[in-house]
Length: 252
Image 1 (tube, helix red, strand yellow):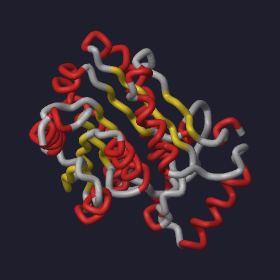
Image 2 (tube, one colour):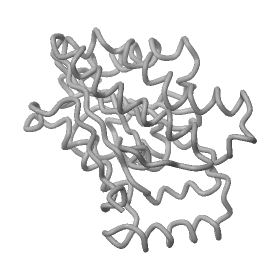
Image 3 (cartoon, helix red, strand yellow):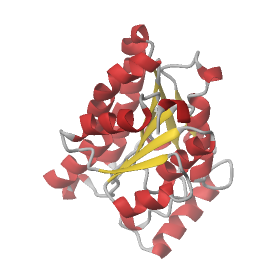
């Protein structure tokens, strides 16, 4: 496949499930070439099923050697990089008293350090295409909100929002836009990854549905639609903004 075969070339991390899967498919539906990156090849293959312009790369983005490999792979497949979506996330509820080094390394490495070095590795390609970086953070980390028992995840996402604002200014002279999307609670069937049973997960979703002004939780497809809008030509004047898409939950 060459750059003439696709509209744009997009990298989506955490592309095997949930928001990442929906985002990859949303771009593919628009004629874009998409490289989905994640740890589990089987889930990435499922994302790519019936989508001829999605390519799969099973890799751990916390590995220092992987960011360059991801960018090289995208350029080999599509000839360029137009969009980088830093979506991969490591979840895990645990109070401060129970945190350990392994948990800290995994959450901060995936949620914060990996986006730093993947974006750094993509700078040359993004400058050439005058491309866009989309950082997926969380509405739960906006403003002065707190997140008991999920402090590392929330702190990493708050830091990612700071990087979005800072990089937008730093990279503007290179023609690169940087934007953020802060989803609220989205039903990604991620209960087991959060350490919850199915019953606990359904109870959590019901609780949030009652609390959110919208009266429900979000869907991965709704978040994916906003990602595609933020990188559209009509959105060229937007940079440094972090858009909450949370059914009004962060206002309560």
